[in-house]
Image 1 (cartoon, rainbow over the protein chains, first blue to last red):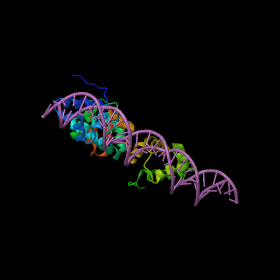
Image 2 (image 1 turned 90 degrees about the horizontal axis):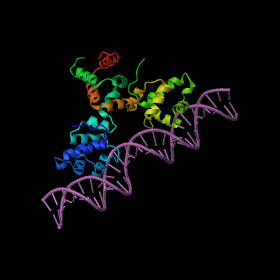
Image 3 (image 1 turned 135 degrees about the vertical axis):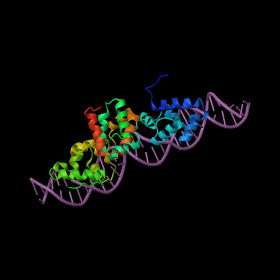
Image 4 (image 1 turned 180 degrees about the horizontal axis):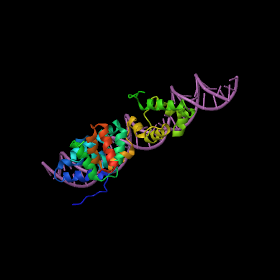
Length: 122
Length: 122
DNA sequence: TGTCATGTGTACTATATAGTACACAATTTA
DNA sequence: TAAATTGTGTACTATATAGTACACATGACA
């Protein structure tokens, strides 16, 4: 198993939808499009990169449908979840400082902070 | 000294620009507008809330001009700095988790984490 | 008192965002 | 083999974003 890293939003969606489709016919472009509430032609164009990724709401529906992480799909689409933005906007200086501090920290440091906060080690 | 909390972006800008203008005539709507690179009528409308706050770039220029914190002004404008968004988008799951954990934490916990990270206590 | 600067009303404008609607050829399925 | 389903090309559309351009009345000032 290998990972393709350099992948657009559309390519990623197509790949994962096709994988599900191989096991279940309900994952055709048309049927997925209907379930997430867009026109089939639009989803087709999104997957081929013919148009920009859709709105946050549609990306969330897609994440749900394909069992993918919404924050990751949003990131691939060049977006940041609106609930995170709201959290930051309520205390902009505190969060701006912290996030810029963490910019260059390794993954496991960030992971550890999140764990410590969750476990109440504060 | 007291703080006015319920204030729109435009009201805040007007108040602080007017304060500077009281000491220095170069802080008129027209002159500030020229220095940040917009039409005077546009800045006037922004300050009165007649139009939405301007782009991130103009808000930064305004922050510079009025000696205000750009992250705070952006937050008042309903935005999050694009450099922070980029940091989050590079590791969406790590940052999403951490930020949601911190949502309900008091200011000084967040402050302390930022300080600890800066001081290398990790 | 004339001119210079000031703030603002009105009327546009260009580009981006987020899609829809329909037709059609190819493939699948019953 | 007829009917249904599929993916996609073409042509639009509505709303938001981010402003400009100009005119005008008012007030400051030299």
